[in-house]
Length: 272
Image (cartoon, rainbow, N blue to C red; front, side, top):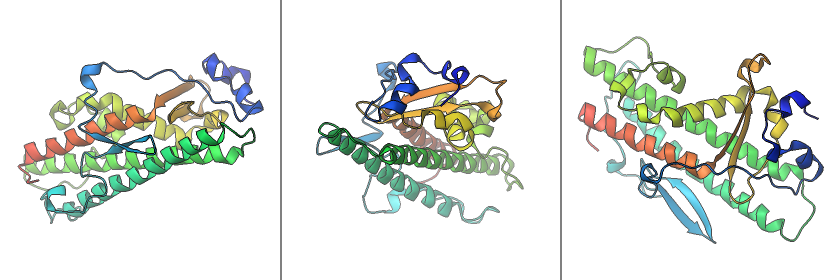
């Protein structure tokens, strides 16, 4: 059982004691809201509705399940010291396609379980845990993709400014971007909140020892991201409880992908 000192940092409505006793219990969560004018949702994620399930598919780089063609790619330097950058971008595009498949599977599993619980009282705990693992996988790939796009963009900026290749990528991750306020002429700074969220939650999934204290938490009506983080697993730091609607996180991330692609095209005269 989690220690009382740790549980004090989780809002009361997420009582872990209740969830441990009754695996059918589904936690409530705060709605994650943003001002309507900045949602811009339908242009960057596609809600594919199948069997009344809305799948928040990311389509900033290509249409999901469409046949790959030249219009999905950029004409990048093929002879940088870090290799053929077209291959780097190609892998990013393909990976986002695979992330969409993970999203579809997670949403299917969530709503199948929701329907199952309407007429069944017994539930194998691993069923809920599998959805937690799927969420962690999605966040891992979202972060890796952001890291690689940040690396690619910084490299292109350096080559343009210095007219030579660098020996080291000095901004090659979300963390390094967050610590460099002048990166990319500050044109991507509107995404700092989104990238910080991805960074914190993915770090929590990977490193936070106390994240297991919320292992059975689940959204009641739609997929929700839960994470319980403790920096460096040091109790001198204050634990942080995260709860976010997955669809909103994916929407914000899709806008980031769109904007960083546009930044590359506009600043480096790249052809679509």
